[in-house]
Length: 60
Length: 485
Image 1 (tube, rainbow over the protein chains, first blue to last red):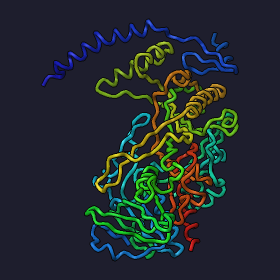
Image 2 (image 1 turned 120 degrees about the vertical axis):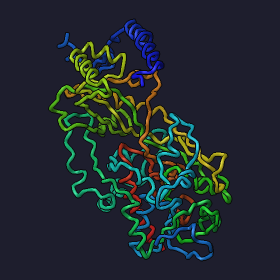
Image 3 (image 1 turned 180 degrees about the vertical axis):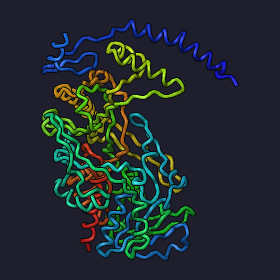
Image 4 (image 1 turned 90 degrees about the vertical axis):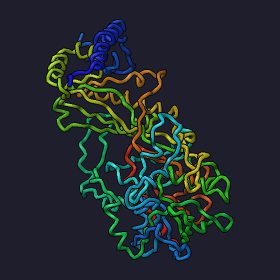
């Protein structure tokens, strides 16, 4: 019995040679980080992460 | 005594009981045992058998047309002795004071106080096999806008196993299995129940007579049978103000996103479950909830290439940028990551409802259509709680939370809405018949001897699992009926 069927070979070829590059390129062309959302309190939201404004200053 | 209605051939041989209870789940069994302890004779009717059968379960078939057409109608419920206790998780908790208050759109809260509802706290603990120190050792939460979720774990108690022998030996309770309610017959200007029309699987009809009657068949079925008993009153029993079946409630299970542990020592005991504080609920006008943080300290790869996958994962997780990038491509976790799940209160909403379908089951009873709906108050609760709990974690410095986009952006639809099989409402309790089906003693408005037990009488859902509260209310109902002539 073959370790991998022809169908699986085709599927893997499609996955790695076609779909993966498309996925990587499409992710690369979209902005990695969104603009920060400043709330009216001590919180800032960057890319969905809810952070303290004071922590942000320390990091930069 | 346990009597199989399929084996009875003479419908005229039934005796009159003090109380006839339809449904042998936690509520029905608890009402029956409370009444039996007071010397009352009880007919306890179970539509299924002592064990699961396809024949019985099939009679729960219906439609679901609401949000997220999940299979609440058929899969959350079990139609045999012990009811839904046959697959409950055993988590017990109780309502906060704010859960008893009125809700938006002028919908009243509970007509009884928390003290009154929880009068039988210790009895319910015993019934559900909770330890004596249950609810007492909850760790204190350090933040200001949330508090620790107080809960206790039942083994879980399977009423089928725990109470079957007791009922078999009982002198006061006759448990009838394979007994399907198909109609409620009224007399006395249509204000009193005369008998319940019940059918076995051989399609032989039996008439059960009693002084008092209790429906304890679950949230969907209680409403269904009140609506379907429409031979004498076209709109159904207790439905003079078009309230039966309305305000169907669940607890929303919203996927909020993920978090990264920032203080390993803080999470040494694993999961953390939080309720919003009373101050936050009042200030932001939200419903109650439980938010659960489940950290995963060991992320393991699987499959034939697990060693390679694990090595790649460990390499990627060392770099924050590489981790971020990988997460954009696939669902990717590192050690210390965790997921946020929830149990969010649904506000009572008249458009969220159970109605009768045009199709019928094998006994000729109309099937149900469930239309589960949420409203703008629920959206407000869901988003506010997500945002506030993320802020609380940031302020305490114990975890960094990444919220999903539909929590941050009010213009996006909330796509990930689940449920907890906590079906409530549909025959809600209210002093005002315009806002409820039963009064504070769980008697159907406008009726002299028909009562409802179970979470279908809850006016609000709160931020807690329903079984503990419905058990206390069932004891209270049994005590109340026992005092009646």
